[in-house]
Image (cartoon, rainbow, N blue to C red; front, side):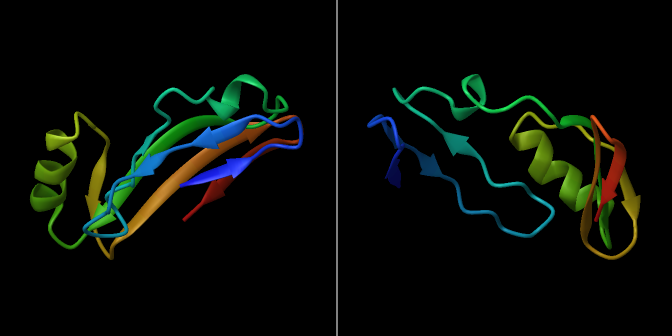
Length: 92
C-alpha cells in the first residue's frame, strides 16, 4: 500500500493478514519514513491486553510474533489503555 503526504513524500508499507481480531496486524514501513516521527504529540499506549475463549491458543499465535501480553479467558477482544493530554482512555 502507499499514499502521498501533502509535502510530497510517498509512504509505502506492507501489512500482515491477521487470523483473528485479537492478533494485531503488523506494518512494515520498509524504506519509508515512519509516520510517528512527524505525528503530533498526544496519545501514549499504556497497556495492551486481550481476552479470548482459548487463551493458550492465542498466546501461541502471539508468541510466534514475539508478542507477550496478558490474556484473560472471555470473548475475543483487544483491550487498549491510552493516556493523553486530557487523561486516560480505555478501548475494547
